[in-house]
Length: 114
Image (cartoon, rainbow, N blue to C red):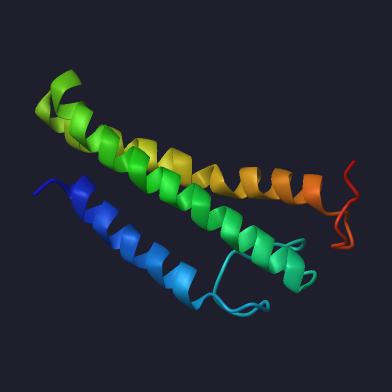
């Protein structure tokens, strides 16, 4: 079995756990940053956003795993989806932080939008 599919299955389990059991208040489990733990509202927003991005990453991993064997040689076809998933996973932090800062000020208060 392709290691990418095994990773995708494991990540889907973690995603399910995160959606199902992430507490509504900041705790040991979930997306943590200085801004995300300011209050319950920032915590919930950041965790929902991180989960959505993780779901996108898992879908991308599955798609890359399906198309890589058609585009690359066998060794590269196994490694490429894993590298792509790693890069996308690292990008979760800056994406969530940028969107948190657009939505909340530095004290965790939601910005007024017109």
